[in-house]
Length: 182
Length: 124
Length: 128
Image 1 (cartoon, each protein chain N blue to C red):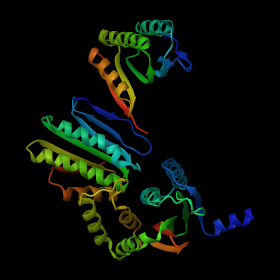
Image 2: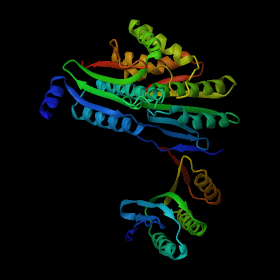
Image 3: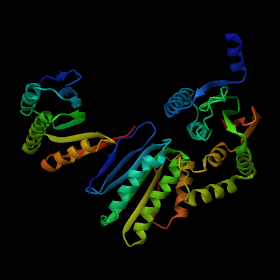
Image 4: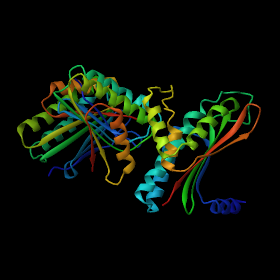
């Protein structure tokens, strides 16, 4: 059984996978570990920076949005603060995947933001980023609505995403960002 | 006025706000989850400083990484410096970036384009 | 060169690490002994001794979490000895006073000491 997990991870080029609660300390530990790994692998400085930036934004995105879920005692199968985090290294790209529960009534808004980002070219992303940066609004959590855009810019590729229905109230949202190794 | 010097951590930058020796600097990495909390005291300090600033204020930024929530706070800080400049004081923002770091150079250029305060880009 | 002074911290007394060979001088932790005079006597004597042949540069770090009022008098004595060394000109003394971001009292105390002394004293905030 352990061997099949190992082989599965190897096949999918998974460097790191985590399932559980996401705290600020955990995010720090993962970033520290991945930074060492990138250094150790002798990855090009520019790529290292992009991958690191994408990781920071993806992980902190999950961290911030987990607490938008309502605490509902009867949802025993769903622990609000748990998520899935995965980082992999393929021949051509690094990838960062995050997965967390989301309330169904938030899906439409999120989907439209993702579609908008994916429909932008490089220059449009830059303009969009600046427009949101400049508009002076800041959510109470201190996020800026810029995370997705920044991930797309650093990644240089379209963001992959999926909403998997779980219950009447929740779905499981996964986001994938890739950074080319060349 | 009291100086504010903050030790860097794995997620927050080194901050030197020293009006006695005229050194104003933010350097290192800025990736805290709660950037508003971290930058609040810097913004408050600059507000206080702006009441009687030094003849010349040169504010240096040399960041390796910053997350998107920091980018908003940095803009807030720039706007305060811009306001100080527009009210007739000599203010210069120096944005230092690694010679190989095109992203950081571009970010500096983007900020420069948004602001009306002397903003210099320096490759290190 | 004078030998280093190293005292392990306890739940009431701070870590003392004065090492001239490595130019590292540190007083950190908490200082709440009932008999602070007794504890600080050896520290003050050591600094007095060090002052006879100090390093060209002395960087002294204070990173205290808490200290009682009787310690505070002794800490001031210590600072005054450092000031004396600095003013005598044989050593450029630089004192660094650390305080936690939420600890206004410690910050205030550092400011107070700074105002009383003629030796470079820099306050540095620690965030978490």
